[in-house]
Length: 290
Image (tube, rainbow, N blue to C red; front, side):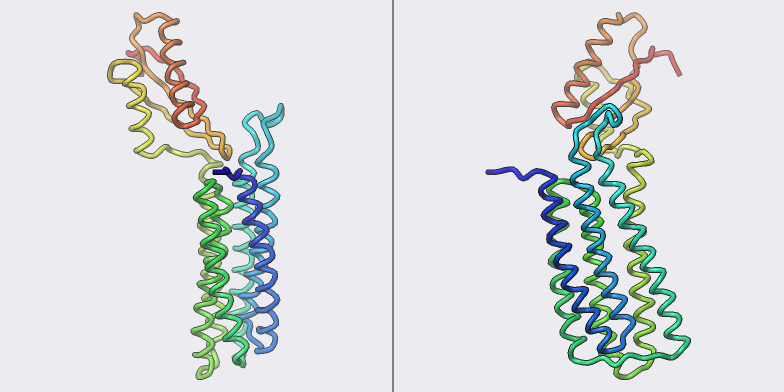
């Protein structure tokens, strides 16, 4: 079975998202102009923002795939996180713009004239965007690239906003304020997606606290190699895309030789590399240190 590289997975998802979103943007924008709907036009621009994020993801795929060099000794993997942050910020800016638009439409008591075209285009959008979200999530699970998860959020929020919009199209036949309220709701949904994307991108850049499962695994490895209960502490994880570095402290009896300590640490480092592909740096301490 042929294994597809991470870069190829990201590029395929990026190309699929790009052309799918361009097509949907054109359909939604045309339907929004035809029906004089700010909510539908907002939804169209939300879709176009997905195209921008797809381009960013494809650029990130090329950059993150570069090998380590003198200026980037840990590789270029964090380009994926930077791409996710850029996508999140773009989403948030779009959300703020349409929130203001929704307020303006309510203040001016402006209503939309929805028709069959708006219903058909919105229904098509829901099906296509949810399909694209599922594909992006599949790609994320294959290569664990945060920018792909961000793109999936993009597609999912667009599909969800289209569902809300479809409901509003029917409601808009009876109340004038439907389009303004829908524009506000869609902007809030976009902002919520942006918040999650930005939060998930910042956490690895700022440094992470390892979860309990990993700490238990790390303790078990050290216990087994040392042949006693180990004292693992001060654990930090640093992620650079696929490249992961870990640093932690480990206490040893004072009467053990430097060579023995070195041998133990080397075995632990090799074990972590073989089983989890993690580069470890371990700081030894005497047992009576605080």
